Length: 209
Image (cartoon, rainbow, N blue to C red; front, side):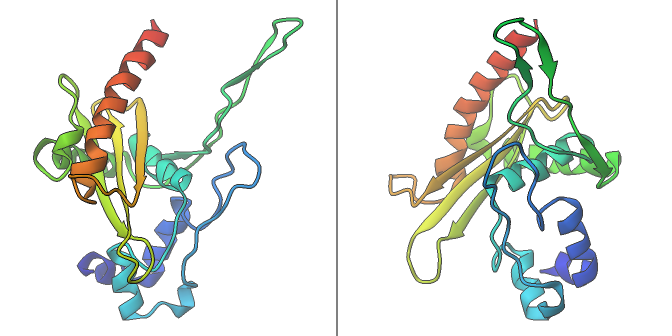
């Protein structure tokens, strides 16, 4: 809430737009959904405070991944893609799908500071269960209410590996978990993220050899 007040509505919404949270990402999939935010002119002090701590809006998983990927990419935004290349089944000719780079949303220095904060979340904060031995993992846990007075939650963990040289960004989402870990992101989603990241790093680096 304090940061929201310091930024103000105009600057806050400017960065929401720059990070792509007010529009579709443009990923190569049909029927992509967009986010739901109050119109900027309707945001007063109470609405800004509420938005600042993560309520009164809806974003899609691919928007979240795109935003964190921008941070991991030294602050430069790219259009997410599903297909890396197309190979002609008859001729074997390979055509790479070009990566579309967009604007520099935040400075490289700021991006590295945010990654460092995300690393602290895993090394000493709520995301400890997402750690992978031998790697610097960055992330953020999340717990949100599914509607009003439903007593149901959406639990999440978004992570980057590794923070020194980011190669993988993942998002774990669990709808209304009811196990022993409760519904907190650090207790439920983070351990799954640890397993996925460990396997993803292994596969990714093997593929590069």
